[in-house]
Image (cartoon, rainbow, N blue to C red; front, side):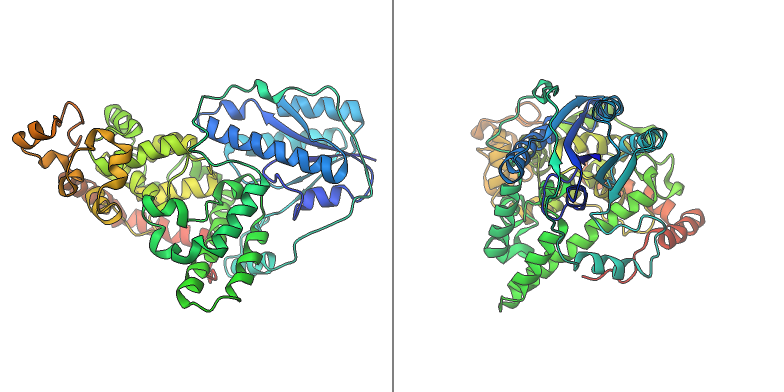
Length: 485
């Protein structure tokens, strides 16, 4: 029997149910497909491609070392590629892990399902996140997930023969924009394991205190998110190692930090479940009472200034420029950037989210769109949180070190005014050799006025009868009760 084991967002061999079940017997062709349509979407970028390519190279090396075979990599139309493979190798079965991504890949999988049926090819797929595939039972979700995450890592022995396709497409033909590799995270399982070990051994010590600032978050956050996104390491591996570490440490603060980190693994799956249950959240407001709130007021000039880090708010601009360079920024700063775009600039999340998807190396649609809607106030079920970028600047970058590094125009500004350079007097500007409005932009909005206007608009909807009724339905559909931390 000839089989395909199709690696998708599971670029590892350990705790990979699709791979381990495929290699029990038969003839196996291990493949990965760069879908050219997907990588032309507005949410795709060089950050994603570089990370995937590095991860694939390591996966290929592991396959060669442990099984004496290669990973067959293709670039093109997924359906056409699979048609050729099935015909050339007389494939009977396909093994892959279930993916929970965007509409493009959902539609692709529906087409593939029908195609496999027409060719009498059995498609075996496995669940690597503990998602309820048939119907979410909100009272059972937490118990089911805990059962999944505490189960043993899957292992298996090979009793198969590996196939190799000599007519491979060269995936290096994919064009990528030049990005400075010294600033971005590298892909591959080894990097994932090293990050997990260093986080558990030392970097997590001040996780809760240091995760909020971009100065300390770069080191104190686990940095595992892109590796989880592309499956270099499984959630069960992370959970099990973290759990073991917690049981060995005595420091209350250290244990508390790791417990907080561990709880985020459950929330990761919770948000992916939400996208699986309602894929439309990629494109539409979760609470329909908010439809039309921002869509007709989109300011392209504000959008451009926000994208380029030229809003006149130093901390916002520093965070955007950092993100553009590195493909990552810590969670609180992501929330602040989205909040600022959605409230002070009153930009529709449906456009800003697509731009940010390109910049996040760890772009995970389930988390991405849920968080964008939460920070934009369009869920109806979450608290309205409008970040004050000036307060965040003082709180998270007290001495302006981060601002000066990423907004060098402000390098000469003293500590007290680097957060609010528009307060410099004319004489101050002359003395410092800077002109606000020319060398660095003046604020594109008044923070207090724009915040009040946004708050009034969003609260008017949230208090409406329509919003409240829809919110109850949303809670009934999407809440995962007793989600264990």
